[in-house]
Length: 402
Image (cartoon, rainbow, N blue to C red; front, side):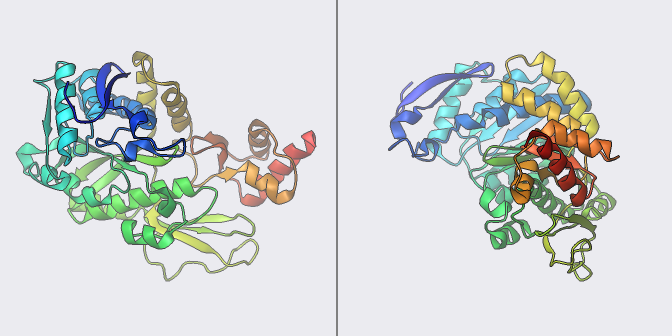
């Protein structure tokens, strides 16, 4: 193994991978080593890769066919190599990176794991790589776009290179724009304004899904979101696609806006793209409403897909604990209402200590509403109760411990 930068062999999942020795590129404890290494590898994304393995196996179980897989932004190739070894029913994996050093280390990793006949590495621009597979007989069953930043620049070529009923996975790490810190950037990149609310991570997922729906519609393609999750510094989306103008129209019918009152925490989903009839005032307290969107208001989890994923957890004993924690939570909130409340923020608002989440959920349910935890925030609750009921439930639970 001869490289012109420090390298080490690590074990992730069921594979051995040569990766840059990240400690050699850190300038201090504050430094982000993966961005300085000559080949990108982020150990913090292991949970993302764990769930990708689980999601692809679930998709293969449902599709019941041998899969042709693509990773256009592969880095050292860890994700593609894991998919090849850990997922049953994968016939070929094509990994690519524009960085020639990444391509070389990926080729080494292919040989290291004895996958020369199953995994193939190339050194091209990601969009060019995908465009070469846009012909109907060359398309992929699964494409995984995992960039450093926004996946939007690669969506169009990915959609054209994906088979009808294929699955597309997207990662976005530009959370500042998606979570409302830079709403104009979100509007520019994703076609919808973001909003800095306590449930901004769900808004981020819905902005990404909405961008995908709009871009797919241009090619007369409809989308169905199978799975999404927000973990640490990124969001992740898995969607299947269906060709046809009617399917595209059905997807666009799920676009709309989320209206939010920062005074009383009331929020409302407005289905439909025209923004001219959006409410200006809160129906609960009369304050001015802010909005996020246009964005996706359809489901961001598919119940059956999530159930199948949870069933598959048992056969993937090597997956990390974080993946095993997230998947059951996602299944539980698969049919939950849009948005969520963070009880810590409500407690601060009313000047009372933060009560146990379990107590708040029990209080909301006792008032006749649905309530459940959410993976988006460990202190969050999804519910169909109005904000006044949620605040009352938090108040009652807090007073018991005050």
